[in-house]
Image (cartoon, rainbow, N blue to C red; front, top):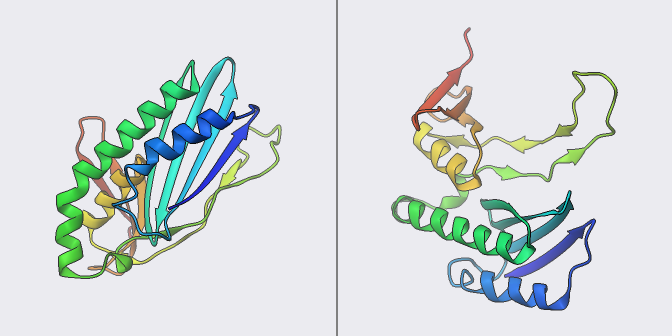
Length: 179
């Protein structure tokens, strides 16, 4: 696994980087050698946010945590990633046996931050995604793996763009465009 450790508004010490290698190293047996792990540490108002994104082919795992100390935030992120992997392990193994995972997951481009405008309705972040056909269940699985509240995908049964989302009562919803 390749590591990219970035500090925003904070200088990262070598012992923190070593801790990142050690903590994320336990996941190396799960990912291929081509996997990329991006660790971003941000300091905001005396709180440290650690965000980890692991990309392996078209699969994306993401977790984020905020704490007073970056080591505590890193520990929480590693726990979240471990939980995501455990939770989705059986679903992922079933899909791997049926067909290659590559065709099911959407490839993400990094978000682009635009300049802030004074307008209340300005767009401050744009994401570009390439849509691959997925079933509703596969879209929900991918949404859960990246830790988002909603996920846009190309529905393989209707060939239309749909959105799945997580509801407040831990159920899921599906948005379809009216024709």
